[in-house]
Image (cartoon, rainbow over the protein chains, first blue to last red):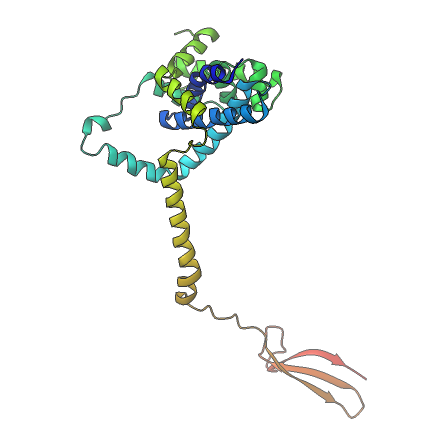
Length: 164
Length: 118
């Protein structure tokens, strides 16, 4: 297991996780790069962590939470920037809700703790053990949260609004 | 549409799957340039936040003390002096004179703060 192959293997999984966590491709790219950089620095200083995947996803999770908080504070500025970039181009401002956007919206309906486990296990492709380590909870709690999240997400996606 | 757990997981993975070139680029940047992780947008935002903090500090420390109206002090009971009255029988009373307050004897114009009978 060498650093190069681990980073290249984790990169797409981490990108997918960060994207579904934030709903923003650019922010997901930033978070992924920062998290992988932290892994690279740790690896070069102290050697490989016990589970590189759990290590890097735990960092990405914390950074995503902070980034989302910051983004809420910066929302007015973002709106101005977005308006400026699509100014004069009416086609660009017509946003079509794709399946991906609907899924992000459905995920946002889940409880945050349940969503975390689901994303780590499915998109991040972590084992339940690694996901529990990344979240600092027990394996049985992670299993329960994943089960609850899948059930709820299935309801949302099948019914459209999550109602029974 | 029925979705089992496996189908749901696959759908999530498929929708979140990034462009391979983006993943490769991010991995390469992390491996080769670990110290250049901040993008210019982050730096611009930090600069904007510092500028805002400076403006707030200038307003708070320089402008407001000079331009805000002085708030009058709440009129308080004001003691201006003490009067010791000694009766012929030797007993004495101490009066504090000042602004009539709510607890002053009506019409007295001063407040009895203490009585000392000897």
